[in-house]
Amino acid sequence: MRNPARALPLLLLFTALFLASEARAEHVVITSGTLSHRNPVLNAFPGYSFNFSGAGISAGGSDEKLGNSGSAMSCLPCAPGQTFGTSSHITRFTTVFTNTATYNGTTYTNVWYNGSSFDFVVEPVVIPFGAPDTLTLTSAFTFSGILQGSVPPFAAPVFSMTLSGQGIATLTFALMNLNGNIGYGLTNISYNFQPSAATVPEPATLLLLGTGLAGVAERMRRRRRDSRRDANTGAA
Image 1: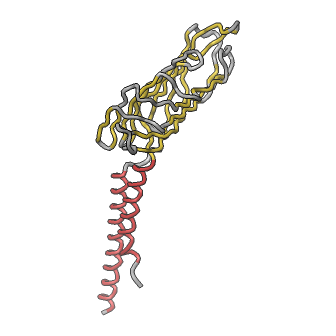
Image 2 (image 1 turned 120 degrees about the vertical axis):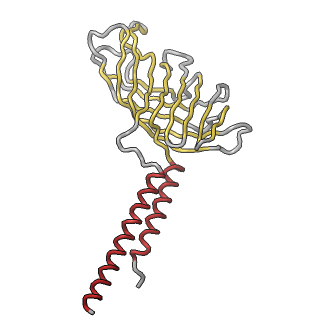
Image 3 (image 1 turned 120 degrees about the horizontal axis):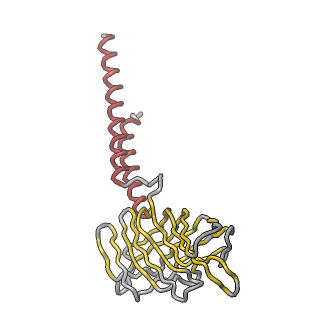
């Protein structure tokens, strides 16, 4: 029967290479950068701009609107003591504005992000009592999305991936009177990405891990072989 220890190094190396390929090709965790926009309910053209990056990708762009869904808010305006929750759903990516992306070391200009979508969900915050007319609060957010990039003449995407991320959202409120209701309305939100505690290892790290495990298996095989040889020598 073939010694399984001999096949173990090759198996570990193959697994590391496979995982490295899958980690880069299918999903990217956004670890730095920002996306910001104004309140789409209060502004006909809330506008958004983003510039963020993760392993192998750095992308930036802007548009004057968020898309059909825009964002959801639990109250507008919000009275002191009320809990405010919000989410953003961005689906509008036109070619009117100049977008730039760098993917695996290659930079593309005039990128069209058609087919992309960004979703942000913010942890609820409580509007404090006795706050000034302009109020700034921060809260954690989670992010998921799809990023696809094409360049003229709009052939198949040069990159396509799913995204995830997390960070701290900065929410700016202003005291306002909306149809006789006085309270705080969200005027602007900025999502600031941060690395998560459990970031997926880089492909090179996975390769080094697989190579190291293969080396350990080889040393164990040699040690067992030397032990058998010493035992045979002693018996002779």
